Image (cartoon, rainbow, N blue to C red; front, side):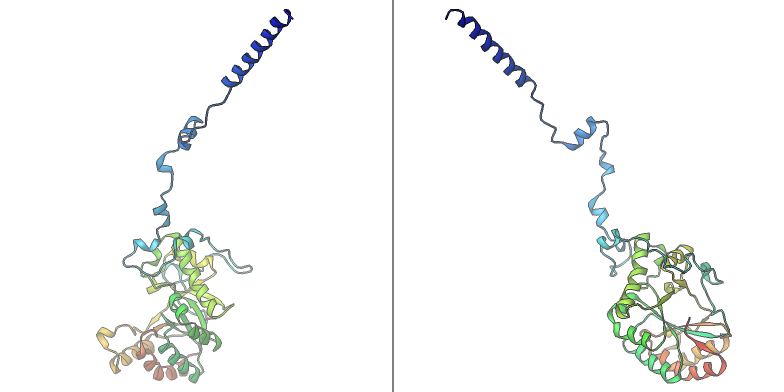
Length: 297
């Protein structure tokens, strides 16, 4: 029994020593500050490198005057340049118009083009007139109006006229907007047209006010849209000088009869312009007697 006492003391001492080592080996708690942790690893995070949530969420429209109906931040952030359709040219068409836009039909035929609709009254009246005269035309439609009046877009397509993208909300400074907005604007206009007419063929784009730039034409080319300008402007919008009665009709008629030639593209507008319909009631028969009238192919 006496020998057991020293042996027991050795065992106890060994256990206590092992317990102390385990306690000293316990790791320190990780830092609760991720920036400090990253800095310790040699990769400090600077505040300027962290994107601002408020800046990222801001819509491009905020920089424009007024508050037009523009895309949500989510729609803009997810915008990707669309791929070109197979079997069709990707690059922009080079023509004699501004920035290389097209300003003639490429044949002896003459094309009537009507901008800024659809207008639920005037576009319908114009369609009645064109049907009565057996004439096809091209309608450059604004996306937000196509969204609001899909029944008019459906009739345009059903009666064999050509549909053209004329931007979402007709911004004069469209060519100056940021890339994400341009992609959204042109694509949304196509989408509004095709919501009304699934599978609609859309081969053309006309810049608001004809303000084409090489950059804007390139964005249109991403959607395989050819940029169309004009070489005859009937000036139907000069109502402050000519009013909306006979003086305006005479002015528009004189311009068209003077300037139209084989291959011309004639610019006119029907949105909020009943005098355009009135003028073409007498002008269309003259045009038919002089030229072959077509919708842009």
